[in-house]
Image 1 (cartoon, rainbow, N blue to C red):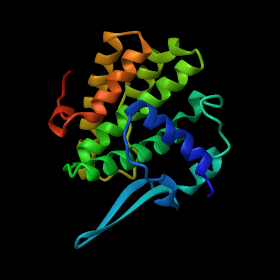
Image 2: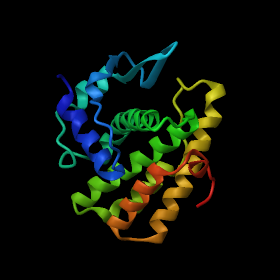
Image 3: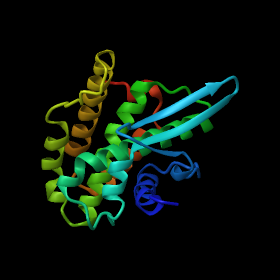
Length: 201
């Protein structure tokens, strides 16, 4: 299927970091769109339809990338969108399989953490771990929200950004060892909702 190789690179990386066990293929739920990026769940009685909407222009522009070899910081804004939507997909599937409630805030927090974890993994593989603090400053310096974010949703995104920022800062201060960082990200993925919603770690 179109985009499979590109999306599968990121999906395998997320699975390697978080150790989730579901085997659903992102491409079976993919819905290329015009400028929309979102996980859409449509419920009808006991049935639910799941769609992962990603801007088709972003998919077309980046589908040739071989990661982490082709990763550059200039690619980060668009790759972050893809990582985040795959993160939402994995978090939703894992929570559903465990019959565990899931809030939108939890989805956003996990998405922020996963974006950082994946890029940190790529930097490590490229022997560029020295850039991790620069990347942290780039990602968490300011919470920049697009104009498409509705006013009533802004506080949720800002809160998710702050919680993820505090958690990742703690991880980076605790250890310079990459495997220790990976273990922290894996543990975070498995945390309960109340644990993820803590504002300090």
